[in-house]
Image (tube, rainbow, N blue to C red; front, side, top):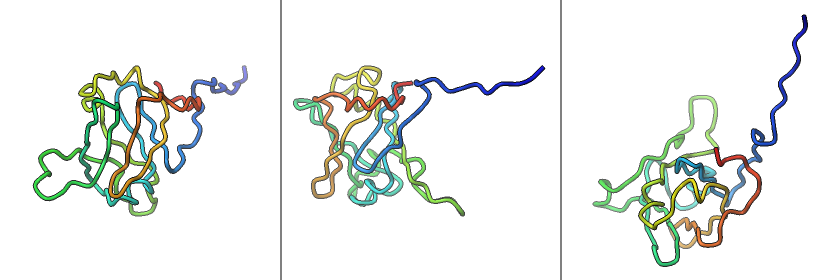
Length: 135
């Protein structure tokens, strides 16, 4: 008897997340490049701003007095030996607040930066890169 290698299907192969992109899973988990968060000063937590009319979310560092509304960024700090290049935030509730379901918007999106904000425009739909992040 011999073993054979189980090959990954196309659904299991993910393209690398690039700077300027965010990936949203069906469960509402947003995955960012660490460099994008660093660019606007986000470290271990962030505040989510909603634009219901234009279906946009914006992310920024919490200001004084906003700590109670801050969301935790996981993977935010480097380990002892390995630098973290990705960070995740649960944005499912924010998506529902602008009347979108995470499962419906799962995919990869482009981010724009303005001042101290990372802006995610959900009105145009996902970039469709076949990232496999929809699981």
